[in-house]
Length: 241
Image 1 (cartoon, one colour):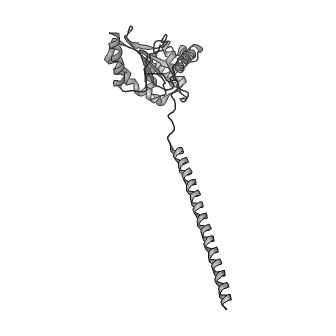
Image 2 (spheres, helix red, strand yellow):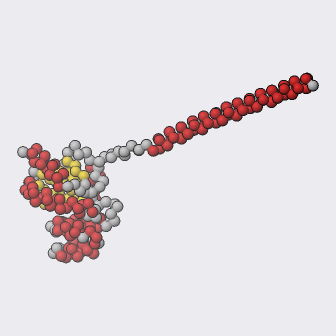
Image 3 (cartoon, helix red, strand yellow):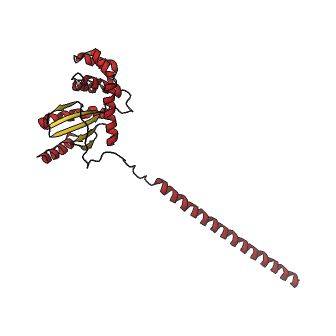
């Protein structure tokens, strides 16, 4: 009886030992699994942080440098104001661009306030995103051939919602132009070449948007408030003495 009881105790001890070992293995496995999961979570969080980090700002590449002074070709370009000005305000503009229309009163304010000190020069830059711009620029340049650029310029900008070749012919008649000659010039290679030359010059300068201004060669981007033009013009007048 004693031997039997002793054997049973041994068996029970073995079973208990096996249970303890098994439990230990289970606990260790669980710990290892948890550690692996935590490591994976850490990696995932790290990756999320990298993905969420803001991208570096894109380079502006060849955009004109406001600190530089550029030389522009204004020969044959429409201009108004002083014949021998101290300040030349050269504008690259797009007739379909709403911001170009918005800055026109500012240009008038510049001309009114600075009078004979300032000349305003227009350069063509019909953007590809504006499907109606090219025809408008051809019409304005054709009107320039008959001495009526600024009058056509004002009519087109005043009616940006009604841009069409038919309208430009109508404006030509209202302005007293030779309509037949106007229509020939609109379709001429010479007018296209002038518009293209201005656009190519803008590309070389790094100008990609409108309006873009060069005040005595110093770059000013966009439909800026009058004060921005005044600051640069006053600096240039002081420099001119």
